[in-house]
Image (cartoon, rainbow, N blue to C red; front, side, top):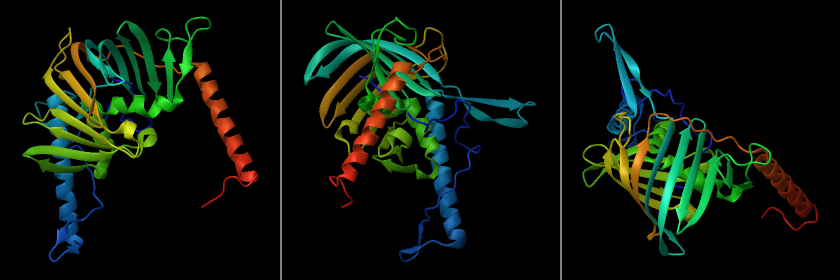
Length: 317
């Protein structure tokens, strides 16, 4: 299920790829007998890479309906494309897997990209849970917004889950486009089986994770793969049945069907019923108890590390 940044986020007013994006690549193409391209050949190769990257990312953003384009003066002046995706809510039902066993699941997800955060409410086999993440903080809530007002609910820190939870925000189709743009010339565009593919590294709290996204003939993101040294972050997600699923039409397309596997094993198979992409009001303040607990944990780790180093238990190898 969707359980999920870091200061890797892209501002909601980001200029979307196309002629409005200028990206320079430090990687030059090969010219001639295996020698690095230099001078005008290198510049031409970098410009070609940037143009390919911009074309593919703009096509993906346009296909999702993420961008709004404007002209002034009868089309004489073209304004940059504006990313209109910041906050969303979606809900549905399906199956998630617990210890390898399928469990009927109801879910509701709230998310934001600036600043990045996500709240996932689920009912699995009659058991309810709320998992929340905001940048580097992760916690569970007894009710939405628990721990923000004294005496109202309980927030339990789950810092070890922060990276896995926030990753889910960036492998949604919109997050993929935003993160690929943020990666700049580290984003590599190619073709596989006739489909456009782009690969890029994530940064910040999800550094060390590489994302590979595949587009279909309509430039919609249909497959997202993540690779990392951490097996828990290696996933394959299939998106399909794109449409505008909002009660209020926004022309923003969302996938109705999501299937995820991890290490070849099924994780979830979910169907969306409603998807509000009209920037609903959702926020993810970090409860003070979660902040305090994280600070104490960090201090304890630092203190333990210092003691081990002092008694010679830990040294450079």
